Image (tube, rainbow, N blue to C red; front, top):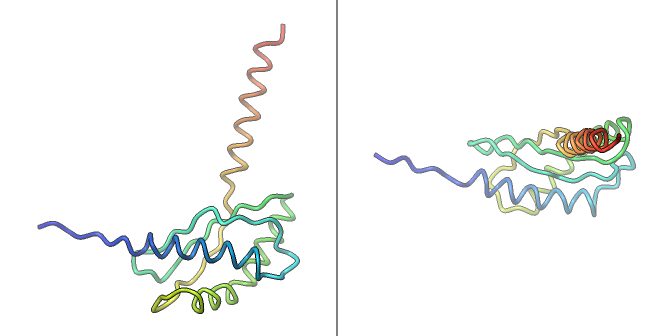
Length: 121
């Protein structure tokens, strides 16, 4: 017997990511929220929870302020999703800081440093 797998969580995640990106850029007025990019959304199989990964440019303090602002705006963002997306229920949003870009940049710096050390006499 073949088990059918639903792609609904992935479709919902894509809709949420697109909508949140636009909402944060255009409608969110919190001065704490700096340059934030939604790098991904993962929705649970029951579509009750969505983990929203956010990349933020700036210092550690600016990143924390942006995450605090987004956490404060969670209700507003969820309400906006409910109004704009055709979903029976909107998942609970969980914002997490995505440090992937930072790690990639740091690795590039280390590699460049190693290459520089190898070419120096």
